[in-house]
Structures are given as structure tokens and as C-alpha cells.
Image (cartoon, rainbow, N blue to C red; front, side, top):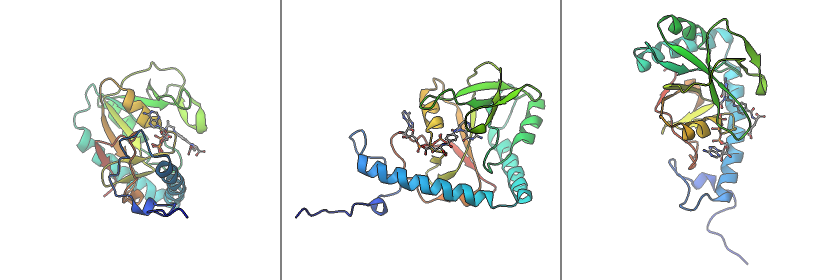
Length: 212
Ligand SMILES: Nc1nc2c(c(=O)[nH]1)N(C=O)[C@@H](CNc1ccc(C(=O)N[C@@H](CCC(=O)O)C(=O)O)cc1)CN2
Ligand SMILES: Nc1ncnc2c1ncn2[C@@H]1O[C@H](COP(=O)(O)OP(=O)(O)OP(=O)(O)O)[C@@H](O)[C@H]1O
């Protein structure tokens, strides 16, 4: 009879910071991790949606204050933000105020599953339209290369890795950018995980901002 050193599900044996083997990837480990991530995404999204809107508003304002400190001068900066969905921090009033300070804003657009995102320049008042997953995106706006990318977090870990919605869009986009932007993950402290069990394709955030 075959004897195994590990039980079929050995996720509990993985160390935080595990980055896979030298081989491209270990399919058994990745399928376990992918399944675990799916469950965590649902739990974390339900959890943040359970926060009353007033409290979410207060947390978003706290995050916005901290963003100013991390980004510093806004003059001439091109910042990619996002149109909030599923209880993400709402930074739209911060965005409007920062445009008045000289910042330019872009929003991410899904062109196609499995492709990098496009960043499209946008100013308040310009038309938006519903696209994939019902997310509002600029109808026109030229494609631009932001120097700051703000990525919403479904979850995050102590090594600044981000758990998103599972499309791999931000990872693919950051991997493809010729000039590496400052990458800021924003989310709530309650979305902290011990580890997301980072894989070779996962790119860590430069900074993570929560309300704490
Ligand atoms: N507000 C906002 N806009 C954003 C992002 C974001 O995280 N937040 N994105 C950041 O990337 C892109 C959209 N990414 C998304 C990726 C997957 C799903 C999604 O719902 N996927 C499937 C499951 C995927 C899987 O597990 O294979 C689903 O839930 O049914 C939604 C948005 C671009 N715009
Ligand atoms: N640079 C890349 N090249 C090819 N595939 C990639 C790349 N980055 C991520 N992927 C693939 O995308 C899929 C989803 O990855 P992951 O679970 O990390 O998504 P996520 O970061 O939570 O999603 P999102 O960024 O859309 O919010 C994985 O199957 C992964 O292999």
C-alpha cells in the first residue's frame, strides 16, 4: 500500500512566505490553495458587507487621510483608483478633492479575461458605462500609465500580498508594466490574513493602508 508523508490536503503544513517549488508550480498545492482562496474571498466579502454603511464611510475617510500621507505631493501625479463595488473602501470624494490639487485620475478597465487591465484617464463629469461585473468604467478616456496604482483588497497578509476577486488582473497588469508604479493596497483591518500562501505570480503591494 502506498504511504504518504502528507495527508491529501496539506495546506496547514505550508509556511507563510511559501513561494512554490523551483518547478513552475506544484499543481496539488495550487489547487488546494485556489480552493482555500475561493472560500476566503466569500467570507471576507460577506464580512465587510456586514459593516453598516455609516461605519464603512468612517473607515473609508480614515483610509483617505492615510493615503495623503503615503502619496505626498499630488502635483502632476497620475493615480489609478477604482469605482467601488462589493463594500470596498469608497475613496471617490478623496479622488474629487485630489483632482483639484493637480492629480490626474485613471480607472481600471477589464479588456478581456486573462489579459492585463487597461488604465483609462477619467475626470468627474465624463461618461461612465457598466462593463464586466457591472463595474463602472470610463466610456472614452485615453489609455494611460499611472505612476501610483491603488488596488482594493479583498484580503491581505503580513508580507503585503493581496487577495483580490480571483481574476489575476492586478498581478498580470503589474507584471506587464514597463515602469513600475507605487502600488498601494487599500482595505479594512478586518480583512487581514496570516498568509495568502503567495504563489510565483502574486506581486506584493509596496504599502498597505487600512484604517488602523
Ligand atoms: N472596484 C474594483 N474595480 C476593479 C477591480 C477591483 O478589484 N475592484 N479589479 C481588480 O482586479 C478589476 C475587476 N476584477 C474582477 C475580477 C474577478 C471578478 C469576479 O467576480 N470573478 C468571479 C470569480 C473568479 C474566479 O474565482 O475564478 C466571480 O466572483 O464570479 C470581479 C472583478 C477591474 N476593476
Ligand atoms: N502574470 C500572470 N500571468 C499569467 N497568469 C496569471 C498572472 N498573474 C495571475 N495569473 C493567474 O490569475 C489567476 C488568479 O490569480 P489570483 O488568485 O492571485 O487572483 P487575485 O489576485 O485574487 O485577483 P484580482 O487581481 O483579479 O483581484 C491564477 O490562476 C493565476 O495563475
